[in-house]
Image (cartoon, rainbow, N blue to C red; front, side):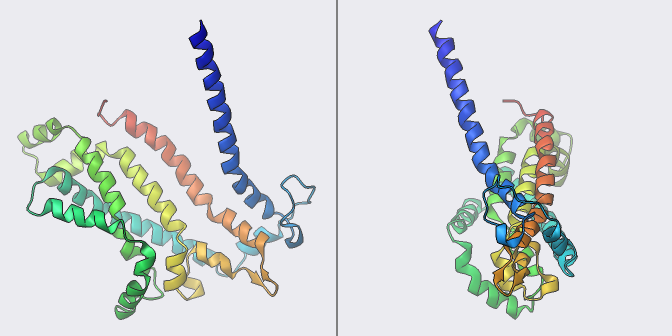
Length: 275
């Protein structure tokens, strides 16, 4: 009789700790939204302070002459990057997981080594490279380096390796080639991994501040995250307006996360891979 009581207590403690962590993680987001409804002089008041909400900050963001350009530029950049990343990553992951070719392990080792190089150390070489190609002040400075992200190649490679060999052998017996096996077998089974790639890619590129800040100079070509710095006044940054802009900028991320949550469950239940 003692063990069920102990397990029940552990469960309650675990649940309480998870609730505390959830509140701690949500608090900054709630503060961001709340400050967006405050005048500049009351920005740093506690969360539950009696402050009359105003809509001026959100109106300044929504009616800014370049806000639509920033949103459109970011959506186009993120969408094109993810599409090109999947187009490059999925065939490469299939090759590393299912094909045997000379130098395959060495190539993978070199790719793994690149994960140990911080992106900040390549800023100057990339700037000179983009300048030589006349790509500065364009979205291609963000898109091109993101296409061949090694992390997502490893993610898809490991998932493809988990697909039973019997599936591939059965397809080969039916006369399917590698392209057909990839398209008709591996891609339908890769729903959770592809959804994870899309979600993580979307978040990372959407929240990218440093690259567009350094490589894109025109205000009308800027992306949404670094563009929030343009909400300045003579006394410095207008924090409530910037946080109102930040709130509006995370709406697509939240929407995509909610969508992919359902996709994860559907993908796992219909993947055909058990245990």
